[in-house]
Image (cartoon, rainbow, N blue to C red):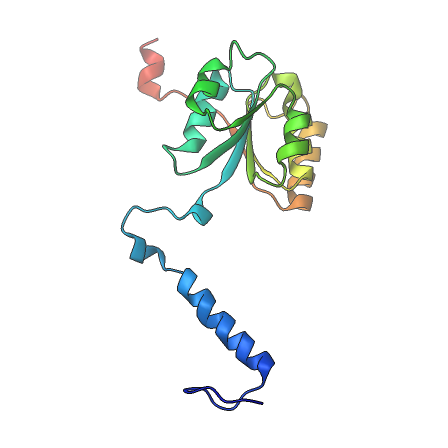
Length: 177
């Protein structure tokens, strides 16, 4: 046992524990100290976007939300259609196969957007959920009720949040078409 000025007599284990708590407290700064509107890196989601041509490009931009989240990886089989997303997110890793994206990036992502052709929606969503990733999926969610039930069960089993995108024009806009 030893004594340090300002501390009661303590053993080595308690001293290290207390010193660690003090040191850790220096690095944990409340958000309000950083200023209004500041988003701490730990408050950002790391997102992968699968299918980034057409509607997928706007989905990717919307979840990025002007930098409130990170787009860390994007996948598309046709980079001619996905070119705009690739240019908008130059730091995102690019893949042509979503399975390779999941294999390489699963530890780096929190959520996935899926805006691929309809027949792939349920398969990719199931793969993402089985990795514990939250999913935003364009409509149609599935081709049949069985697939929808499977995804519902998977979301519950893996405790992930899922959402299906469905863009509906306001009543006024439909009349102006």
